[in-house]
Image 1 (cartoon, helix red, strand yellow):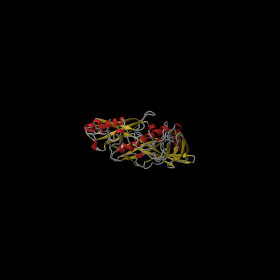
Image 2: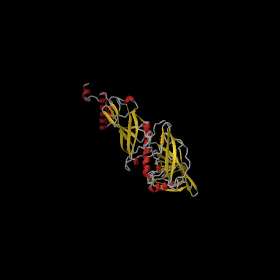
Image 3: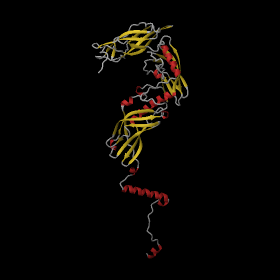
Image 4: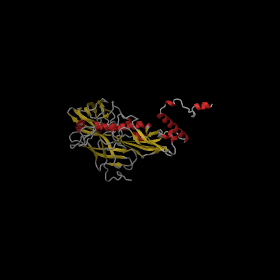
Length: 459
C-alpha cells in the first residue's frame, strides 16, 4: 500500500462529461453562461418570456355602417394641386379576448401604417384598451395620403393599426391587423386615390359631334388621353342621374399610359339643360355624357355602395365642343328661365291649393310652340301638380310664354312660405327637315304676394 501511494497521483479524480474535452474554450464559456442564467431565472421565479417584448393581443375592429356608406370622394377637401388626400372612417375597437385585460396591461392606439401615408390621425387621440376600458367606440381613423404612392388596386392587408403594448414594466410598438375593417378601409383608400389620380392623369382632349337633324341626339367621337404611369379604362355607363341613354349601353376602351383612345357612342337626351351663358363644364360628370374612367383598372366596373365612378376632366376646347353639340341638339336653346309673376300667385289654406302665374323666357323667334308638363314622380316635393300638361301655345314676339298652373299641398298647411315649383317645359323648334321636339327640366321659386299674410308665415 505505501508503495502504491508513493508511485501513484495523489490529486483528486475529476469526472469529465462526454464530449466536453472536444469543446474549445469559447464554446465552453458560452455553455456555462447559459447554464448560470437559466439557474438564476429559475431561482428568482422568472421566465424567459418576461425578458421579451410583449406581444399584441388580437383586436376586433368594426366599421360604423353609416361611415362605410359615405362616399370618400365627397369628403375630400379642396386643397392645393398635388396636396395630400384625406380619407377617414368611423370604427369601434375592442379586445378580441377580454381575458387579456389586466390592471397593468394596456394597448394604446397610435394610428395607421401603410403605403402612401403622409400623416395619420385618431380622434380621440391615443385611446387606451385594457383595464376598465376593453372597448373604444366612435373612433375616427384618418389618413393624409400621397396617392401617387398608393398601389391600385389596394389590397385589404395594405394597412394596419400602429399600437403600443404595455405589460407591467415592458412595452413594445406593434402592428395589428384591421380585421373586418380592413377591406372597407382599403376600398375607401382605393376609391379616393382612383378619383384623384384619374383627375390628374386622364382627360378628354377633343369632342367630334354629329347632331341628329330632328331629335335631341348626338353621335360622339370622344378622344381620351392618359398622361399617367398606369393604364386606365374609360367607359360609358348607364349610371347617370340625367336620365339620358347611350347606344351601345356600355362602350369600354383601354387607354394605355401615355396614349390616347377614342370612345364612340350615341347620346340621346331625355331632357335638355339650362346652361349658364359663361360657364363651361370641367368634367363629364357635369354634363349629360355618362363617360367615366378609372386608372389602375383592367376592366370597367361599378364601385360599391352605388358610388358614382369618377367623371373624366375636360380640356377647355373639349368642353366648348361638347357644350356646343349639346346646345345644338336642344335647338340652340341654352338658357330658358321660368319666374312667377309677383302679386299674381295665391294660396287657399282650406283646400291647400296654390295658384301660380308663371312666365317662361325663351329665345325670341326660336320656339314655335311650348307647354308645361307635370313631373311624373312628384318632384315638387310637398306640392302635387293639379295638371298633367298645359295647352300648346306660341310665345310672344319677345319669346315670353305666360301660363297659370295649380298645385295642392300634400298636408294641411296654414301657409306655404315660398315653395319651389318643379316641372318640365316641352318645346317645338322648327328645323329645315321638320320640328324638333324638346323637353327641359325647370324650377322656380314662388314669389309671394305682398298682401297675402297666409302665404308667408313665421314661427
